[in-house]
Amino acid sequence: MDILESIKLALEGLRVNKMRSFLTMLGIIIGISSVIAIMTIGRAMSNSVSKSFDSIGNNSIFLQISSKAGSQDYDSLSAMQDSDLMTDEMFEKLLERYPDQISSIGLTGETKSGTVKDGRKKANINLNPVNAGIKQVENVKLVSGRFIEEKDLNSNRNVAVISDKVVKKIFGGQNEIALGNEVTAYMDDKMEVFSVIGIYKFEQQSFGPFGGGGVNEDDVTTNLYIPLTTGKTIIHSDTSTDGYRFATVAAVNKETIRAVSKDVEDFLNNNYYKNNDKFQILAQSIESITDEVNKTLGTVKLAIGAIAAISLIVGGIGVMNILLVSVTERTREIGIRKALGATSKDIKAQFIIESIIICIIGGILGVMLGTAIGFGGSSLMKEATLPSIGSVFVAVGFSMFIGIFFGYYPSNKAAQLDPIDALRYE
Image 1 (spheres, rainbow, N blue to C red):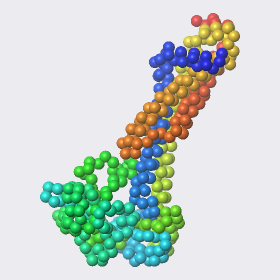
Image 2 (cartoon, rainbow, N blue to C red; image 1 turned 30 degrees about the vertical axis):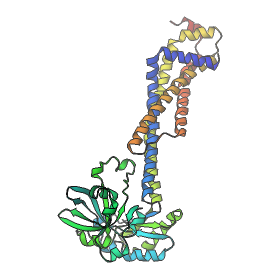
Image 3 (cartoon, rainbow, N blue to C red; image 1 turned 135 degrees about the vertical axis):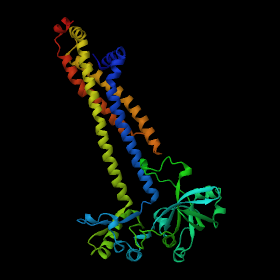
């Protein structure tokens, strides 16, 4: 008996027992669809994270103060003294030491949430005191006017760079009217008036499933950039200091960013934190952070995928169970076929092919369902993604393996039946 005839017999058996065949396939369908959906959503998450970091600038190096090994008692920021913080002098020396490797350093002061109002018009803002370097390190895209400059910092000017969202709500979207005009920012019981010197394009950074997407436009909060020195004058709190816990360095060449990150960290630690028993500087490039996030996502994806794959084993056991039942039901048929000249090899092939077909059909249905779930889930993250061709082939191939592995025992049992005993079976 050739393979084509075995396939026809297998398909006829599935047609006759539609419900039983579908229930047998269900475990395979669920397992394959789960794996495909998880791989697709994981791929979308990685893409979303990479794009979000790219929007910040892939040549950025983040500096932060961290506790030294063995100084866990000083792990909280509340234990820091002003003398432990980074200073403007440190950054000036850093720029002098690496003029060809560092293009700018971005600094941010203490922020304050509030609103910009003009009569009934209102826009949510974060009052964000910054230096001139923030434009590059945060990849601020100006659509009109200019950004904060050194002259604004030196003169403590009440000037501001606002987003196009604020222009839309307060000035009806007319940039030419907003530029040079004034905006009034309300923060708690305080208000400040700023002259608009620039307008930037607001871009929502969602970081995949971790926030940002799906926010109502009326509730969006955008940065209102003001000079860092002006911010220190306006915003007074118990945590206000002249130092910095965080800073962002923009490297000139992104290809050497890891080396620059190490040089910056060593320079600051060796020159300013060598004798500090509690704290040190930790420098991380955007590239290394992206790699760590993607590595973590990959591990989570692999772990969840492994759990989902258990259902494939359960599905395979279901296939084996139904084939054992089928062998028992068709014992007399097997005896007749052997009496007519069918070999044990023919009988074995028939049942293995039947098992493979069940798993392949289940695998195809699982791929279709998993693709739909994965595409729907990734679309919710604003990163619509389809499964890779490789993952589809792996899923279908694994289905075939399940069919052969779990179909072997029932097929071998059928092939070993004695034709005389089989013909006597009632």
